[in-house]
Image (cartoon, rainbow, N blue to C red; front, side, top):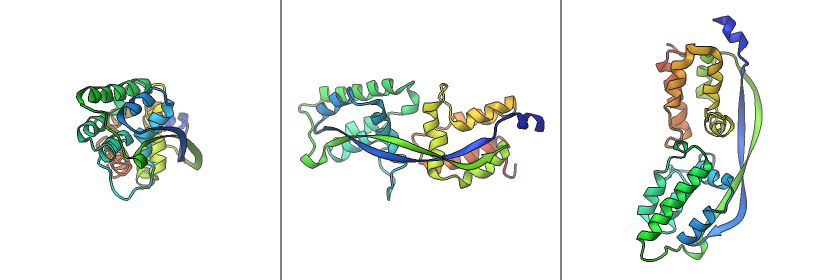
Length: 225
């Protein structure tokens, strides 16, 4: 089995930082939000679903995306906030499908409402896009067992890059961990299947780290197993 390991390129541990950039596009009411969603870049929609993971915060938000948060806090529409809050980005094939779902949910709510919900002048929705600045940590992992030992030490931003952002980079929508483990052949198929069952959207990055460690332990890879 050591021969197999030497044929697999070491896992390069990467870290990142997210830079937020104003788009100049905003919405003051729900109708404008629906219209703007049809125009903004996909990178902006991605940011408003995932950017919260890397933004500093003092407490866990009620909702995992900025659209649901705005509906609750600025439009005071809890029903809409709940509908937007349960949208699960990984369940869509691409950002265009996610965009369509967002618009459908909002349009449905507009049809139900007797009036168009407005936010206060200083509480409009501001569309943001982001740039992910990536840098190599210089750390290389040669075996899945070593990766298991490293997981508790990974930074939140590194975990974000390898487990969440990676899904945009791999054609199959895999994270970097599963893509790398595939190089070792069938031996780690069980572990890859366990990791595939993790939904990264409804867990904090800290929780994701613990879930990943649990997958390795369940598969008997690394640790004390």
